[in-house]
Length: 419
Image (cartoon, rainbow, N blue to C red; front, side, top):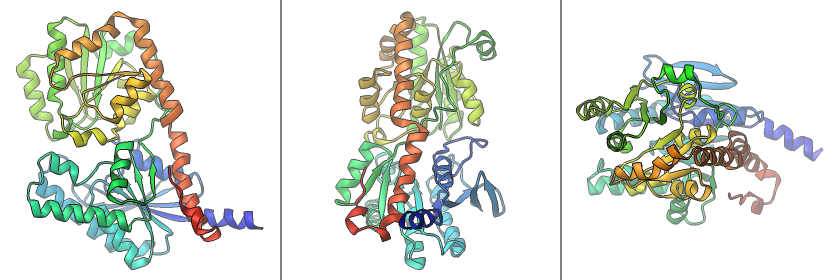
């Protein structure tokens, strides 16, 4: 009888996910929140998502069992700081305007960035007594402060106070990297934290040998292909990849670089590449997941690139996990936990972010030694399957709610679940 009651209680759970930038595989972009929502739906949990888009009207639809509410909130990563801030505030207000529809939900799962989504979660908690779990993918406000976007001391202080208040109000916190988890535990000692990085979709991305048809399509026959796939923003520091392309060209290495995506600095970056006359680098438009897989299938190495700002070393970039799943050599120009991971597992190389010639020195051996490249690529896939697969992390994520919903049936000490 007790087992039946527990099962029915778990299946009656309803979770509201707040994510301003929810994407589907068909749309493209980062789809972590889609993976998480699907993980809960697959466990029989009712899931509703509130997101935003550039469409002019409110829309409600069902996507593979996920109830998606889309708010008309314009946003573009080309927006300046003021426009972005207004979009963030508007999202909070619009969420609260429709939150009464979900007042019988059991949990709210709030995904940052932006940090302001925590405001909506706290208000929902206060108004409808719905506890929330807060996900931290980037450390805000540390990131915008270190990047120089927030310079006013009083504004900085206010953001740090908001961050701590959100952490304290959350039932628990999900961190996307070991570095983020460590930082949170220092800021709010004793808070339950769960480490759930971004996911490697090992069923969708598969290591596949290149063929002549694919390489001809991309004009990369007999070339070692290095691809950057993702956001093209200030934080990504992609001028460095241009410098690497120039260094590789001077060294006469048979390498073809691709930069695929969209973002605030794309036009400027194209202009810079034109000035440098880089015949070994091409820009590709933003594409959905199918398009990304097509490019991955002719790629030998994925480049994970960021500006040399210490806080950016704590992140959990999607492109890293896609590269692992696809069995690619990983190239990165920043230290931190990802550098440690790829060097320990033998699946990638770190290059000096202040010296593009280091790219030539570090990557050339993989062009000359095919077994060495194959070994590194195999290690990437093994790491994805063992530690970061979508299946493994989806199960881990679902257990957070399994533990939470069991709280009324167990002693208080049983709720001290920590990853």
